[in-house]
Length: 224
Image 1 (cartoon, rainbow, N blue to C red):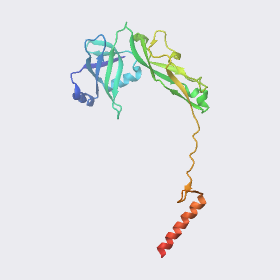
Image 2 (image 1 turned 135 degrees about the vertical axis):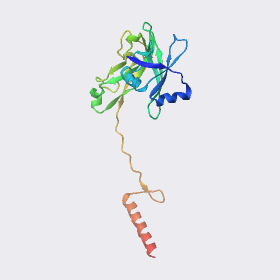
Image 3 (image 1 turned 90 degrees about the vertical axis):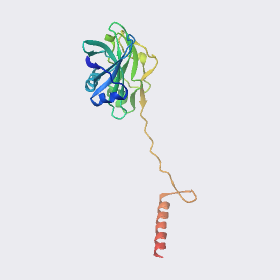
Image 4 (image 1 turned 180 degrees about the vertical axis):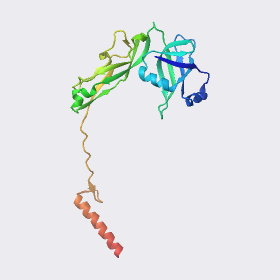
């Protein structure tokens, strides 16, 4: 996977000009680098690539005759339009392990007996974990099969995740990843009783009679 980029000179508010041109300002970081490198890439090309690789699959940034392997470390979205405003890339080396976050995805929830019964929903509590591995061993995502869940007490922890032995989990192994949420019937709201001037509850008949009496008195007053 490759993404064409260009070196960037514009800084600060001037980068808005790049965004109007359909480009994204970005920065390459890395512990092996003397200083970060400011770059710019095409917005549509980045979004298309991100949908394929997410944050844990290495990609190659290419500019002129230079190619560098990176991870999509982070990106900033516009809070209103969800347009990508800025991207941080992490420079990596092929033979060195990297630490990054991998997304957790639950699948086949609709096949779970407890979900099919309508008694509960399955909830993803933790949607990513931190791992360490060689770039070639990094999984794009960790899939959790929840189709077998048939009990309210079922809980899946980080330590229960199925992951390659080439990948080391850096997160707390006892953190909860998936839980089961019971669906309880919501009681119907009771109507508050109508009360008279003294605060005493009156039934619907009395309330209706009072209403008619008020209307008759009002009509009599008007006729007078």
